[in-house]
Image 1 (tube, rainbow, N blue to C red):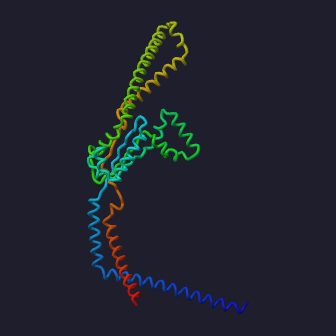
Image 2 (cartoon, one colour):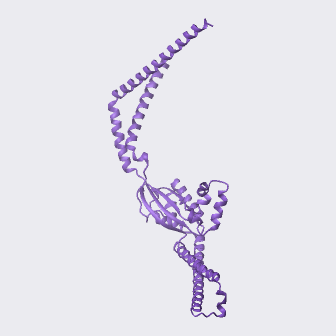
Image 3 (cartoon, rainbow, N blue to C red):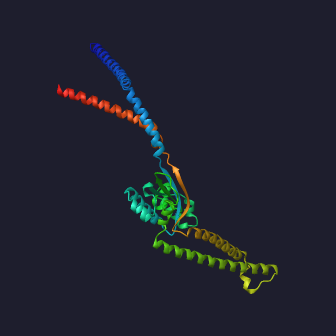
Length: 327
């Protein structure tokens, strides 16, 4: 065993020596690379300076001229027209991608179709309004949540499409006026023979229901007035015998309260039911804050320099390989 120990010690010394040499070689090559890089920029400082100035100037020009804008329209699709609205927006989006300006101008009615870059629709998550006065929606969410995450259920397409409010997002190359894009779009969405018929019937049904409710409320008021008079005079006629119990009187008052609340809901419905796709609000000409578009004056000089370095190294590599092949 003693004869092998010196041999292992010598091997370890040789390995350490080789590792040390490799480390020194690595640092020397690093120093050489840094020096060559400095020499490269020193020899070509005029070209590099020109590229920096040109890239910076072009970047400032593009930052000021190549702007894009976003516009948001919050709408309420009525009469079950959500899928109809989504399909219309998908159609317009496909026409934008195809650059079909004739369709956008003649069919949709957009006056500056080349200005329109994109269109999309997103739901506004409002689960409380979704289940308010709609127990069937609440039961549906409970049923769907049994097999998965409630947050995922609320974001799923089948649920989100049925939220009351939807946001239509437009992207344009320059600022727009509502008359040239927003109003033509809304007019296009509200042009449907099928949903126009449904709208008229729904509007008439709500008005009829409100008149019936008003009649019932007046009848309840008459009954309550008669009961009040009979109580004040301590006189109870045969027609008012069934009001002796307080619970029966409470039921009548609750019925009246429910009808009044229903009337208030119908009043709001009449406001929104005048259109198939009702606009709630719109915000126009929001400048898009994109990092690349905002900092082109810094990005372009760097890209120009990198491209110049690549070209010089490619030329040097080509010449070297050509020389080796010739020799």
